[in-house]
Image 1 (cartoon, rainbow, N blue to C red):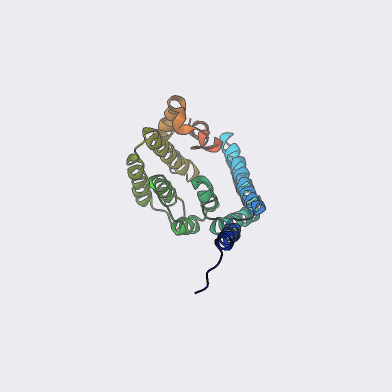
Image 2 (cartoon, rainbow, N blue to C red):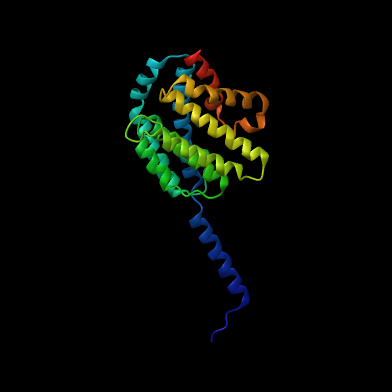
Length: 232
């Protein structure tokens, strides 16, 4: 049996550890590019919501058509980065490419993306269920409002099991926002959407912690205003 000096063993272990860590950590520039792609997707979405807020429905179709190839490229690149860099993105960032496919009128493909994601923890499970709920309500081959209601019910169930009252309210805000978005974007009807608009407006006014920008982005916070523009 050959005995190696302790100092050599320690140095070798440290060297191996540094090499292994470097192999596991992605290049900083790669992470920056991935986040840049997600930011571009968010900018495209913001343009659409601005059109909705001013009631320019005709402009939305033209905007979607003009940006279709760009959106497709960004969605595919974002998905690829998500697979290559697991754990480096928030839940919101993880779902963004799938949400963009949904907005592009491809709910089945969006559902495939969500199904492939690994959700862990009550918050992630609630978010996944919430997004699943928004997909069956879309027009097209995935349309199934009963399935949508069941998925939203599952999202509420996961949220209610959270120990934190603030966490429960945040899940409620996101779920309400998703149902309102589905009602507006898929023309399900103002009567169907009105209760969700009322709840979201109340949360925005009376429970700011449940609706801070980490929970609902600026587009989501505009939805009650968008509802009033469409349905008043």
